[in-house]
Length: 520
Ligand code: NAD
Image (cartoon, rainbow, N blue to C red; front, side):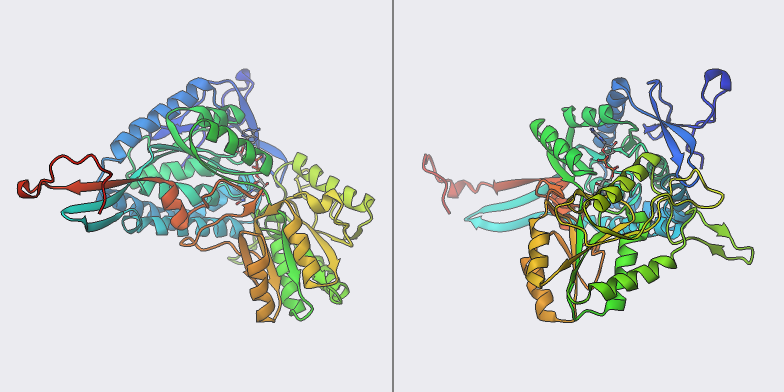
């Protein structure tokens, strides 16, 4: 399917495809006159321009969603479930198309793009079973002749605002459940990789979702603020960096909305001396450099409890030397197979330079740069936004390279003397998204899961993203609001409960006038 408007003539000074919105069940070209470039990160070339909505387009998108909600919330549960199953089947059959779109705009390798789709598909599959999760409860004869029951209703129009690093999975943390529960969704994707959202929108239409129930509003802060302040929008689900998450939480709350705002991270892996160091080194490399470190659950700090640090640094360095970095789309090997690198580029040159600046900071603060990814280039892709895998050792915990999120392929090793020292470092950080302990001591692992102040914990698992029927979310500045993404939290977030107390009068049992407080 084609998700872009054809390139217009050079006379109109635009020579790349234009990416618009999805409103009323169809592509909708923007007339705002404002756009942002969408790069191919592997080549550095601008491959499209994405629309940045103006107020008229924001209003149009929200009004369409409201109309969609009125239709969709009237559908029977069975009919809604049919649409969800159709969506799941289409997604499963055609996910290769979506993976190619993600790789072209984000830069991650194709197999990783497929991985994020599969994790999103898990939530779609959970959502197909929604009747069980929105069915409420019934108490017969709570008092004599009185029944009490609770019902769960959709909120209405709900807003989802997503980051660049998972253009398919993060929206899928929210919209399958929101739609299953009877809401209409307005998704504001990242302007850096906006096409995955349009592909998903078209798939919903093919699955039979009524127009307006899934809307894609492309844009920047103006579109976000439009959602945060609209009286029609009932809730906001946000994922992105911590400063913006905090802004979203405060602004949307002030406008009376339900909010879940997931922020940034600085995930530590605590390695006890009894751990299997080959497993640890493999895990640190996979979790530190996968998706070029642009994962909110990436491991960015290895806390090595001495005396294992020297050996671990050597093992990680050996593995880094074998990593292949290149165009995430890979190449046709000519023998019927497809070869792809281990790691692709970063999202933009600006972001690559920011990552490099953290390596400069670490070095200036006294860290040892064991493997240096600065200035890394890929033959034939010299203008791509590549940054080589980087390993820092002896990183001072006062350095901004330790305290702040880098969001690139940079692993920092911090040496600690004991479990307690490592735990104290994790717990004193401002983030609390994910963490992992590597050990063969079950008692130590159990103590860690109890004592660590983090929302998602891995025991010998480096990226502990919960499965769809558990919920995803961190603590502290990694999540503003009290509701995590998907799982039971997701169904609670996207429904509002009513409790009904009901009596069908038997005239003989009429109690007469009684101004006292009702008792059982
Ligand atoms: P970002 O905060 O820059 O952008 C996220 C969204 O907010 C985008 O849609 C963007 O258009 C919008 N936005 C940006 N600036 C804004 C502003 N001033 N006002 C209103 N809206 C604004 O994040 P990003 O760079 O796209 O994504 C990377 C960040 O997301 C990292 O910090 C990463 O840790 C975090 N993240 C967290 C999780 C999690 O589950 N906690 C998951 C994925 C990514």
